[in-house]
Image 1 (spheres, one colour):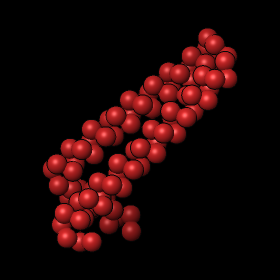
Image 2 (cartoon, helix red, strand yellow):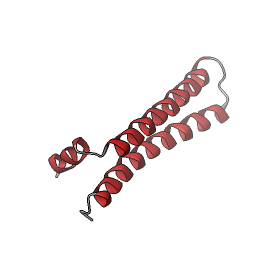
Image 3 (cartoon, rainbow, N blue to C red):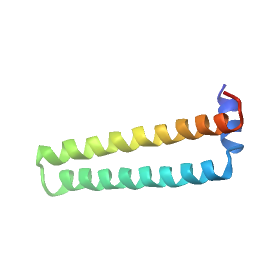
Image 4 (cartoon, rainbow, N blue to C red):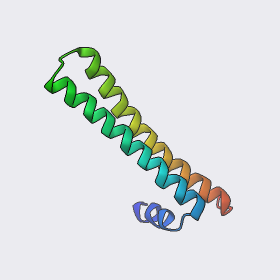
Length: 83
């Protein structure tokens, strides 16, 4: 099962792969912003509001990353008439 997903990832359409790549870069940047927010919470300001914002942005970046991967695989399989 995992091998099939990796093979599907390696055979993505160029446009789908480009969108996936930029989407994952966006998610990585969101993750880095959340790490900076959490670092500032830990180091400078111990305001609980910063903690909740940092955790929420981190969770959102992980969810977006997973959605980009799943949507790229589904769109590619629809383009290839597999589904």
